Image 1 (cartoon, rainbow, N blue to C red):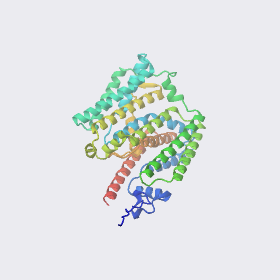
Image 2: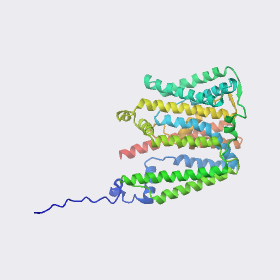
Image 3: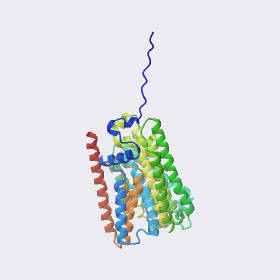
Image 4: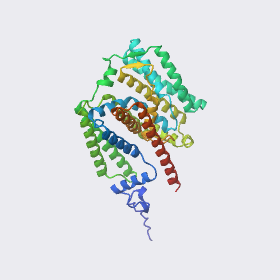
Length: 420
């Protein structure tokens, strides 16, 4: 009687995503570098263009004016970036689902007007006034979502109507008042003008950032390894974490030479990180990218498309209200021109320049941070050169056109690469 010995299938010695013989050299550090090169060649440029553009802008501005990269100017640049950057963060979410919000400037102006009337004129508690102003933005976004979902009106038309309507409502709320000055001893003005992170605490934040980066990378590598997929080498994650700590530490030290890092800018960074987490680590974020990539496929996959649209409009208008409140606090005043001028255009331009695709489905929360720093760098540099705003508009417009052109070219490259 013969016994049959069951065949034992040998365990693969390579990760399942690298079994193809064409990927034999894609492990380790070389594999990470090769993968990055392949992504760039296929048109997935990520934040590379905006980082290169920022380096070029800073280099040119520093050569033209030696005070541009001074610690004092960089501190002011970051503070001035915060309010509009928060508005741009909301625009990123709307663009990810291939929609647009043209009314964020008017919504920010209306929220600041409500804050001024409630807090200064009516004597309402400052935090209650802030909450009501923010809820106004949330309600506006909810209404946008309902009109878009139920009536099918394009977001371009809805928000264009909102731009005009809320500008008029802002003037009505102020009732002909020229300017409402916010008290200099109020917590809002203190936060936007005088509140800076203590030097020792800023270095603690640097260590926390580097430590969190390593922990997230390690956890991701561990989960991929458990699933039989390729992982980034632990040494590479460690090197990246140390490099991040050193880089942020040098920047923090340099800013601390002047006044340091403003708490308002830290709030902006915190909101960027929260949005990044929401987009990359939650079901809602995956749904946003799915809807932006292919709305019909997302609907067939069981995603509540209507709720996704409503939620991004609500987030955008709420962040616009927060930006308006901070902008008013920065100026210590509310007026009929609050939220006007180039606020609307700068917020949208920042999201696009930072790398968010107008076609939907591509972009990160960090696009708002990078994009607004590019715009404010141009503004700050030209101001130091004593050039008027006409040059700033022209240069910003050219940078915006270049960013959209790169997005279109990379999108076409990805499409052709995918077909190949």
